Image (cartoon, rainbow over all chains, first blue to last red; front, top):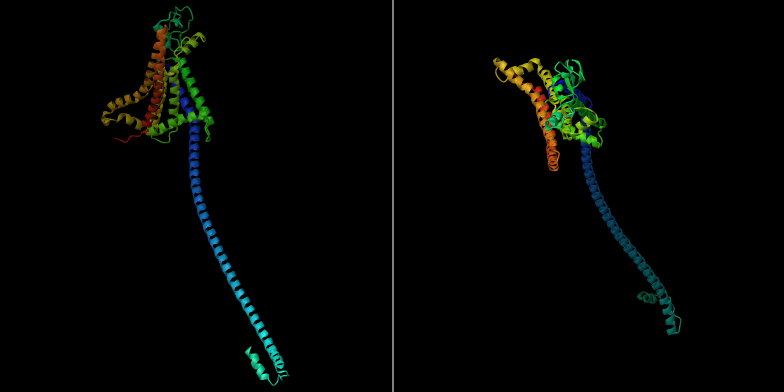
Length: 156
Length: 300
């Protein structure tokens, strides 16, 4: 178990192996590891950003939904008011129309009544004269009693 | 056994602790001397040592083919697995292998980031990864039952010795520690300049006029780093391997075999911790030493 050339041989082998490891083995492995580490870190950062974005988007969506709901409610409310208003207007119109019609009918009736009264008045004079003639048995001069007849007619 | 002699406990242990050595024969070898009768070699020839004695006679001019070979194979397995992962490396969903490799790379990266305070050094982290996985693989060979590979090698491949755990060979552990040491010296000089490095060794911790004392203290301190680094790993794994060998000696007879099996399992489970821990310690200390090498001290 003496010291021999083996020692020098092993030293040379040591340097050769270390050199090969340094040139061909260590750099690619550590570089790949570092690159993968960076990739994973980037991926995680992106995922975090995405989840943040998602949260924001969800918040925005909720806000927009709320706005839309409020708007819809406002529209419905407006429509309801409008409908009520329209109904009121229609009622008002109908009432006014009815009143107008009533007024017209009343005026018609008045006119009819007046006309009937006018006719009646004319007829009354004739009837009165005819009646008087029958009672008196003679012709009554309508001209002579015109004032009387007019009086009668006016009382109607 | 290569010698073919009777199997004794001592011989068995000795056999397990002997490297397959390829080296240069010298005058000390019986086979290279005048009275040689068979398998003779000439002084200066290179060849495999047939016995432990021959191996130790070769001295420095020898290579432990088994541990060196296993060390290279395990290092190549490391490069293959991690190289495949590096080729698959994608920023998309990682595959199973890439996932596994990334776990280790991430672990090392975090550790180096917290331990190594200086930026702009592209070598330290890959070095830590290489050390950790390579040493772990080398230690892991300890968990393979001690006789499997040597048995196959001896009986089917006719290789007399086969030590399969590279980190039980001080040459391997000290070789790596020496590599780390060279990096320490290189970065010390690069960051502080030759004079800065020298003054750190010579003018510290005592005043300048005591620089010989400082130099000895700091020199020992500097040398102790790689030596302790290498010997710690070697010692732990050698002791672990030794215990596995001793447990392996117990087999034979029902009671002893069962006891041996239980012991081996228990020790292997415990050894899983040791293996990982020693690989981790070797790596962390290397990073710490390199960090110190980058520290530029203020003038005292």
